[in-house]
View 1: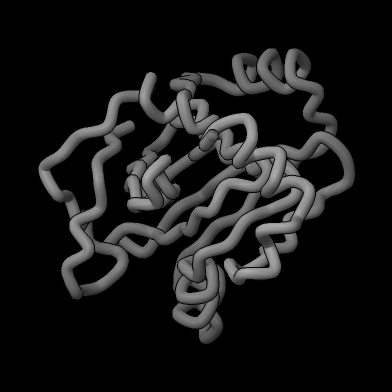
View 2: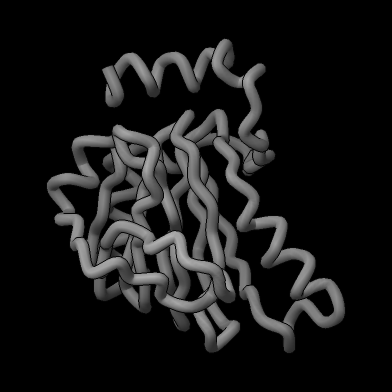
Amino acid sequence: MKAYYFDNLPGDQRLPHDSGNPVAADDLGKIGVLYYRIGDLSGVDALAAERGYKNRDEITVSPEKMGDVYEAKVKSFFDEHLHEDEEIRYIRDGAGYFDVRSKDDQWIRVRLEKDDLLILPAGIYHRFTTDETNYIQAMRLFKDEPKWTPLNRCEDLNSNVQRREYVSQFLS
């Protein structure tokens, strides 16, 4: 895992956009983002049992697997949004970026590769994209039934229960 502040320069979202200002895993933890390096599925199973993740599936994001909808899908994943549940991703192959908002509302870019696992708390604003290889395979874990409806950032979300809890716990 490599994390740093996003450079905000124009250009393809799939490029690194590395500002040269690194962010440590401990600093990610202060905004509720947890990172693990897990080399095998038994480690994922142990974490899932510990945190109460009961369901999982896998997704491959690539032009080969998604066909004509690939570009539109990757662009939609990059719209700033939140979820009302934790978002857990274990990278099985390939690479991609999760961008999360810092305490001062700047983008932090987190590069994930094979064997990286990231947990985003409910209510955090974030976005996702593949890297320039256009390929990532990820396991998605869920506490209950799979539910990952994105709620795009807007003024109305300030009153969302999960967003208010997130702000109270990590941003106040």
